Image (cartoon, rainbow, N blue to C red; front, side, top):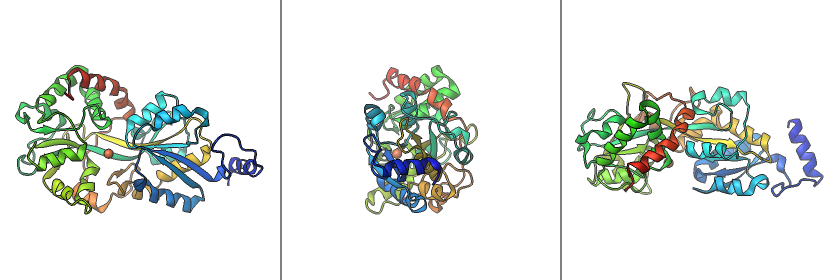
Length: 345
Ligand code: FE
């Protein structure tokens, strides 16, 4: 136990803790607000507790945790926020709800591309945004780049979720970073003109639509393929997955768009040291494999083995190395473009 933890434990034992969460064993716990579903993270958190003795407490919600944190202010019990996309993290920073963390371990484990230069957020897994293509109606090699989605040959053949969803905004922002706003507007208009239907549903719903012949191409994250092809509880999803090939776009040039799930330490973290320990643990060799594998994501830490299933269906591919800070800077413009071209209508 380091000195700060010892002091905290002592204060705690004296019953002198103030603040709402200052429960009895503040030095031995870490409180997590998680946008990630509990079943995805609990096994790794259990391992953390086993190794460190620090208890974890998780509040899960699919949305609204940033707002909750803001409302609670300094009284918030939250030490760490776990997210499933970059935009929740950058929002935490822009609202002043995160704090910088300096850690050699985190810097070593997480490539600079996937963390905030000021240490206010860290990527823990990476995901690729792919093109899913009908096995029956799209020949291998017929589409190879995101840019191709605007080609009139795909008219009436593309399905996607809302353009305003963080997954799409991240991809569109990376298009702006590569091509500028004007060219991206033209591209987005082209993609919209090719849509088979109004944007709706989630990434998996688009693959279902491909399997039903509603469209031939969709945009979707890499891990959904793993989640579908192994889904014995909802075997229809296995059929959806079997109806598509995965296209890793832009292999001949900049590489496929990557983004992250990640974490930030909150501004007023009552258990800051434990929060940093948790992040270090999650970025470490043991947890990385487990953390990434549970949702078929890619470990952010270089050299961590990918799951057998990922290797079976995905293997190696060229990743776009652009920093998420650079991409994040273009998200507001991307959101504006989605409105301007009426993408969702
Ligand atoms: Fe997702």
